[in-house]
Image 1 (tube, rainbow, N blue to C red):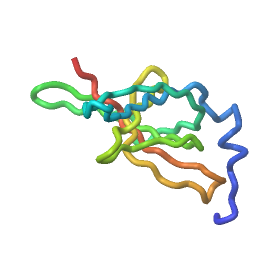
Image 2 (cartoon, rainbow, N blue to C red):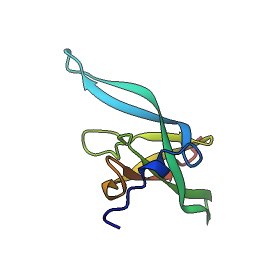
Image 3 (cartoon, rainbow, N blue to C red):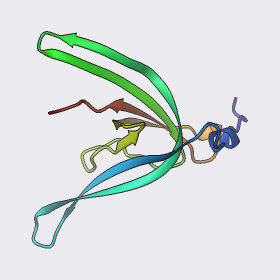
Length: 123
């Protein structure tokens, strides 16, 4: 597999989902020393595959639906760290949080695989 280049497949419109939305949150410290949050919505294309499907988790205090997807793309996604919040992805009407980003450059130049977990519904 070291010479397998699947970039033609990953960029094929038959496989690719278009119009995914990445909500990127940045915290910038202004000249007054106060932190200000800015949110940018970015649109990108990617191949989306299931990770573990949707799972119903029944607990005494309520029911939680858990799930995860894999996103294969050349678009840079941020999983979050001490300096950045994790990107939030909207795909097929559901919101996911980027949990982990892995390099997939062995499959084509610049590709990553992002594991995204379903954002819990709050209310």
